[in-house]
Figure 1 (cartoon, rainbow, N blue to C red):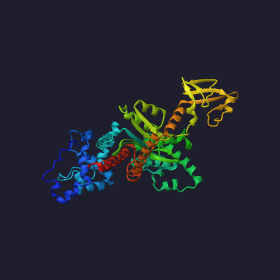
Figure 2: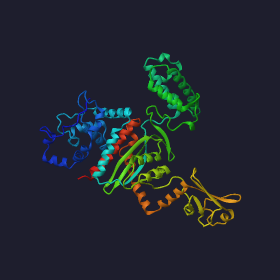
Figure 3: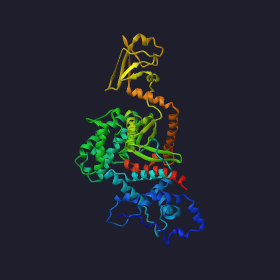
Figure 4: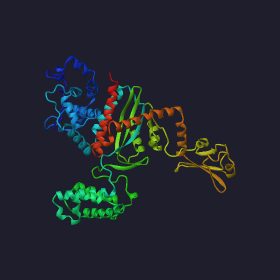
Length: 514
């Protein structure tokens, strides 16, 4: 299919709008469709997607801006592909929004959307370039400008996104990987090359009895048996032709679950181990005492007087930490001419992130601290020229030094003085045999300074600002159902997540444009 720019947007004699009554036109002009057609649709850059098509061979493509706009509307209106196609073919509002009213026959088929998503998927798989994400973020930037949002105050947060695949125990996981490969080898005509004891895995009815209808004391026995069969199948199938993908999954599974032919202990299984062969990208992470299987997303929202727009988002396997997300956001923002305030919660905080933010004229504000709050008395120690000059009570140390490699101050005081000190309980002093030792790390001092800032009115205001981003996470779950996306795999689910981000922004922009 060749790429062709959409040059068919002018009104023609056969335009469907010519058949509308004055009253119908009035309703159309007051609808969401007019705002979408005049504000959102013109923002879409068709040329960006030309790399998805052959420029010379094949029939011309369906207008790309109409496809991209349709995918945005799909999430905005929460429609299935089938419902969206029906709306595009028979609903004037959708045709008007997508500039399709002048076509004698609407150039959409039942495969238009899915084929376009596949093109996006394979392009990113082969090149690493996510052009849809780039376009969504570019449109978001244009929308922010239209709304008068300067981007000098940003807030970010992350959320766990569940994979739609089933959560499996070890027994079911190993059994499924063995069964999948055996079935593929049977299908490819290589069953005679398999040991007879493995052929039972081709029988679908065997799985229930082997994996589910068990007493507790039977699980360990079955797990050991199916692992033995998995190792036998791996050795046998390595010289066969069929089931290449399933063989690779079995190889990964055995690497995750076994060592020297024996099962690993549960605690030895890594978070990035295979969770389900139907979604090989999904990983496992425990957060706030709850296990999550799937992915994680991070969003950055620009805040303004007229509203908020999500200008950046990332999507990754869920073992990626918030500090990593924070580091990437700071790097992507780069050096700022005017100071930018970036507000997050304490999970994004790290010394490296604070330093990187400061170097780029970004004030990273984390509205709480993770871990134990440092004692306030730490800030009362007098430190000059890399030495502790005096304690909060004014007592001078017997000696003091700074260990640059550890980033730590050490000072000894008279033991008797510290024993009699009225603030001994709140002081981090350690009484030794003859002296009293105080150790203060630079990290702890910085945390104490930051904890003091958090109590100021300015930072309390930042905390109130940050709270608003949690509403976005709620909307993504409740309205856009991110935990039940009908696709699996990192790249495909990231694509669908991006459409949901675009829908949120479009809804906000449409609400404020005249």
